[in-house]
Image 1 (spheres, rainbow, N blue to C red):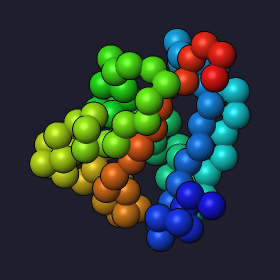
Image 2 (image 1 turned 30 degrees about the horizontal axis):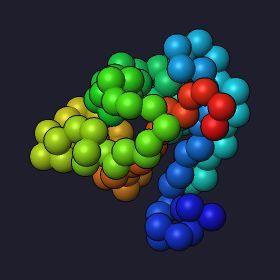
Image 3 (image 1 turned 60 degrees about the horizontal axis):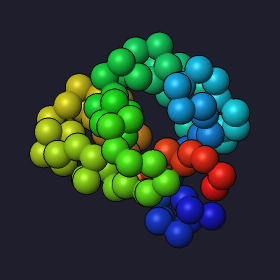
Length: 100
């Protein structure tokens, strides 16, 4: 639903432990296995959104432009060598904790 509401070709929903030790639920739209392998095997190490999300407060959704400078994102290796071809320019997310 979120992908169609945003008129996007790609979307990911991931539920994982706060310490990133386990993914509890995952689904995606528009990605093929090659895209996700490229991310998991290399581009996750270049992902500037995830470390910054770890620093922000929990239980609040954050836009990628609030998490990381958009100009820096558009100049990044992650965007230019992975996200750009997939049309991934923005993201949003939250770390939910406690009894939510």
